[in-house]
Image (cartoon, rainbow, N blue to C red; front, side, top):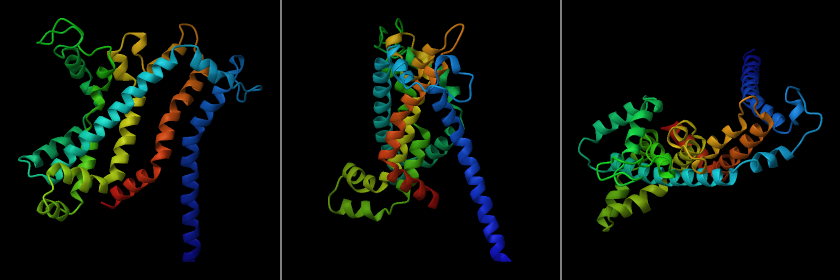
Length: 285
């Protein structure tokens, strides 16, 4: 009797997993179908003559090469900076005798519940008044600062409270004796951080890198606020060219959406082993 109940329970869990998988895959399948649908068949269920040319049209109908370059520069730069700063801050909060670090940790946790939209206006003012940038004087007046520039797009993604907290938790789980032994051997603090502790938290670094790249690559709201020239657009802003006053080119839009999703998929496939290890280590903590 108990064996039968166990099999029934497993079957229910499998059915629930299949249902959730279908819920995730159906929108993706719909995007693929629309992307290969000719112009006159958008409202149909299945395209009679699939057109792969939609992908070529999507990326040649506008300045997508420039948009891709902008997105790549922003995403890669933000990923590198966020990983470096998160590792350094997380190590300091976990391993160094920093005065008031418990209060800093509480403030960091408090920041996790603040919606990012709350910071848009303060960030805009700050970016607009960066001294000696974009025609500004020493007091941050007279010009546009970092508005309409790639560094201006990067500002919200350079530092992440979640990334710092995550790295702090992983560093805190490592034995302090490793650092003590290295100090006895004459190693400096930076060497201990970079060569002893950080290689042990590579799975966490992979998680931070994926999240940072995805956030910068997919961001739409902040670039929409700070960018006003066509040459500075990212790929997400570039998608708006398919929205016209009287109609929307849905097939080209979906083809472009699939195209700009490829870099994130490739990044995840390259570091999926480290990503899984990091997720497992985080679950065990």
